[in-house]
Image 1 (cartoon, rainbow, N blue to C red):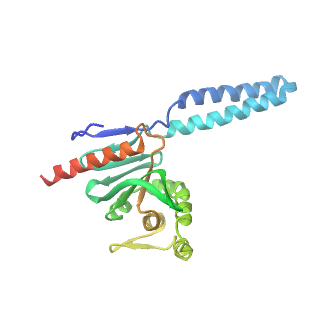
Image 2 (image 1 turned 90 degrees about the vertical axis):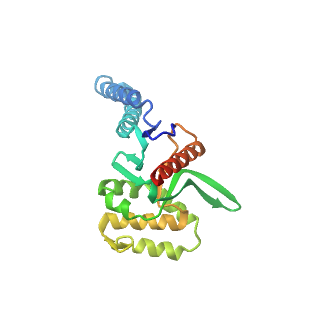
Image 3 (image 1 turned 180 degrees about the vertical axis):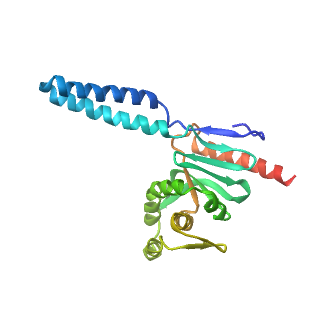
Length: 228
């Protein structure tokens, strides 16, 4: 990653073989249908071809709709790209960048997420689209379960779940509906896991530790440039 003032795009590896999977899947689906129609004695073979093709086709399409660039870094901040939209976080609003680690007994386990702790969640709630908020809420269920397993105060989590649909007031600003739900989720995850936002890192071209180091260096460079 270049440490210049130019923007840097971090691409995902999750789109690899997307077109191949789609084409192969479509061919196997067609083959299965043809066998069903023309050769009824080969029902099991046709079923296997159709099922395998359907799975490959769905996976291929899912890979193709994913954004090719997952992170873009520039002088203003970092932009996270998702199939449901994008979210920008300014460098000045980031308090800490780190990998997500949870304690299991006496050991610490590193999970495949880059955690972002914010100074204030208001700028995120003011700019995130309802479509992206809905997608992130659904994808963060595993993180919620991790938070539950990582905390002994179940009553606090039960209170969060019961208040999830209520309006949220943060720093004097009032949010309702999906924005309130997403904001409350950010605050809950920060309380129990230490970060407001989470970016999956399993399909990135860099090792998580290398990515973290370079993000910190880029952020520090941009903050120094803003102070000049």
